Length: 481
Image 1 (cartoon, rainbow, N blue to C red):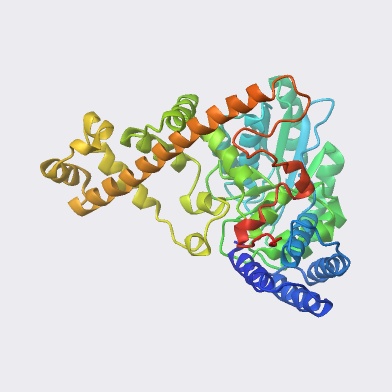
Image 2 (image 1 turned 60 degrees about the vertical axis):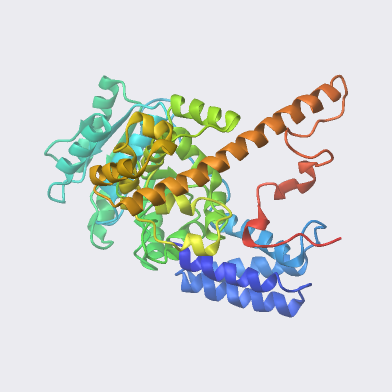
């Protein structure tokens, strides 16, 4: 969604990096370019103006950090202000001291409210909570049955009945107490546009069940209307947070990201795709990093930890220790990576990728072809691909529905990966020995020891709050001394 904004920002900072110093006139020019980039991304005009003013004020009066050139200093300021614009700290649902915690979902029709009720239930369940879904959308045909089906898919209880929304919500609390559920998620009716009937119904529902969290589900693709919708819902029923849907789409999306600064309520969650597991906690710092083209390593790690099973993790550690890597390992890792979501999305989270690679369209069907080729091999061929001769290649190609050229290409690429893994394994052993030697040398001394693998004298604490900001990923070089 933010590719266009990321490209514009990268262009601005690329030009800045070629200047030895930045004058007040340069700051004005950068401010104008930032404003145009934000407006082009559909960021609310008020929000864009305030953002640029803060950046310019800090850039003019900024002290030059000895580890950064002026362009890097401005980049850090922009990163900080982006995080502020997106909400600052990561928000979370307010939990009631006396269960159940009540979550009321509101929004316009078509925003993905019902689907995201189930996504939220699935997420909370993964956190060890016991959610229950409540179908109080009695206006839209089949809304109740849709939520009932989704509840079965995420394996949580569901409650609804043919009466009125307030009665359904009230009775659901008694049902939650009976079942021992500690979170009740109420899906309410949406409209094609904001109207008094919708707001009156929501106000009545809110005043009756007293939700601990009233969340607005908003479609990131509706443009500037997102801000108007958020302001009106907040004025009439009072919001506690926002769930943004479809941030994986092609829309500019800036309007939805303006909601926090306009309404003053945090974005708590983001829908990243159509599947029920494509839903994540919204981290302002990580989103700012994505927008600035620096990836999102923490989310990538969390996805990997949630996807890779213990056996796969242990095998990966073994590979890094001894440098062994087989086609069987490669197949297993491919299958695990596919579970993390669309490859284009996963690649977008990787920091430090060249601009050319970020823009490459990744076809998940290519991974399916690779899997088919490896699965057409015997166990011996996967463990020792060097035994694969011409007749074996023909058999593998026929069995996988591919060509011998594709088989040859895979084997060649795998050989390169295998050599890289062996090099990493050898490097790991050297670092391990160096770490043991360093530990023995410093035994009994009070001085802090550097982390294993870091050269002596490297003190990361000197970077202060820059430790999480890898500026080199945008092609900047530290100033020469």
